[in-house]
Image: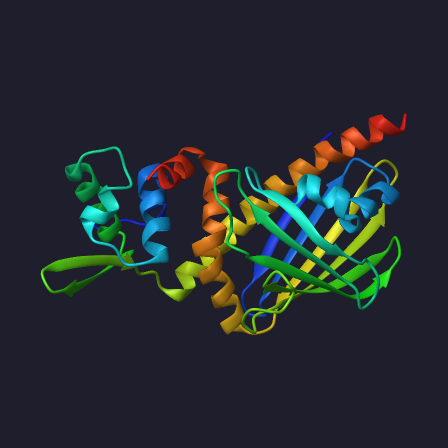
Length: 168
Length: 106
């Protein structure tokens, strides 16, 4: 089965739109996006692993997690997802920031993400809308993404890279 | 002829160099210590990165330090391309997880 994947970035509105179909029913896909024990199995790009420190999926609740690779500890770098609104089996929105291990935000940069779910006959479509608060944030995310995300992104493209960096 | 960023990141050693100097400015010798290749090869890679307009040089005493120079929009494009790639792979992982969960339920 071919599954739709669409990724559009609108720099003017600082928004990224992602559409993706999954070959599973709505209940399962919803769980995969909202339960930490399932998120841990897919959310981190390889070879990174994700560890949840806190998960409280309710409006006003939060998910605090860290990503690390087998070779590199990430030195206490955490990500914080705060749940703003939740419409069960339909959509939820979050505020995403970088934080320390206790969930205190680092820097003022954030993005607002809305995940919507639509059940189909034999698949479920997920729409992700990610808005950065201002251009400075997008630039900061880009800079951080380049510095940290790069390690993750490039790792996937070529594991050779990580061995080079860690075998110093 | 000016090279583009894709040439820069096409090579794994150059990608590794970019990650290194993104964190801090480094001398060619310090960069070379991270790799198992000759100093000449490192110089060659640094030249390519320089031609791609990705390196800034600064002189401190007798040492030359290289650091990452990347203009904002190019940086955003690069980041977006990476974010797209990460998203794509992440969702492929989810496909597998969903597949496993479905089979477990049966």
